[in-house]
Length: 412
Image 1: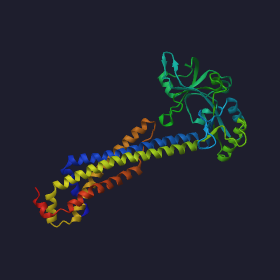
Image 2: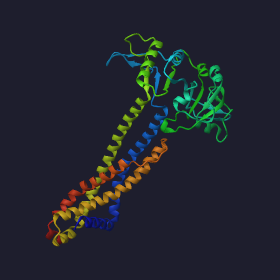
Image 3: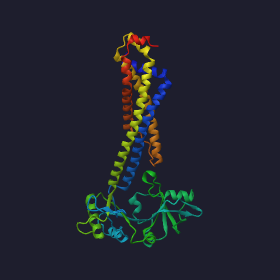
């Protein structure tokens, strides 16, 4: 009996015991779908977020004051050193004196948990109120769905006008146009001049739940000495990035009056560094997904081995007849191995299809917009199925090949 005949025989055996075979294949399918589904979702989400970083530009960096708890100073085991916030005059001084061709965004978060109201309608208290300058939208990769950006007079005078996120517009206005309507934020009325295009969860809902007002207007609502402003710099004309970072560091040290030999009293984060951090996180998630899939497949392989051992016992007389007609131990072993692989491949194909669907659905709920087929994981899943079939079927196949034909023919 050659390999092709063994495959046909394996398929006949599957059909003859279809309920048992289907249940076993489902065990394998669950394991493969868990593995492929998790990894599909991770790949889809990472691709979507990488597109977001690409929108922000490779030649971009942030300048901020260190977090409230400060940074460790002087090496391990030493106390945290606190630094003053990045003040308005320092941010403006950087914007005016930075010599590289760049767009410099200056912004300040007034509050991250406010309500926006229009008439009797109001949002949940999860709205962010941010003061921005003229470059905030292009530097952050935000587009307008309706309306316009702030004008120069509005920015200079701190006029009470606002840009609102897509989610806020839908919540307060529904199908009605928000333009030139008044929204109440922190007991102040702002005329809506623009609505941002939706970003979605894959990009952190950037702007979707935000109200943007002119920076000069926002300054009236914060303690200017203690509020920490943020700078984001988008370089133009593909400059020498390291040189631009060096110039920004030198200028900011002079503005902040950092003494010679003293650590920077600010932090510079590159967009590509954030992308690298994301890659590191998703790498750990892939490892976690692989572990979950491996554990599930291990359970599937144990179940398959048990089913194959039952099959060997039930078909003892059949094995005796085959041996009496000249079948060698190798052929008997091959027959049961092929049968185990056939069952695994049936479950594997089903599991891969389920995994791709589940992974893309999960990714879509998290904001990803594309439907992807991770061919690398599809091939990996098929190889794993064959491996699980061979591993789980080897001992039952070996046991079948060692049965004595005379004793097998007497088996009842």
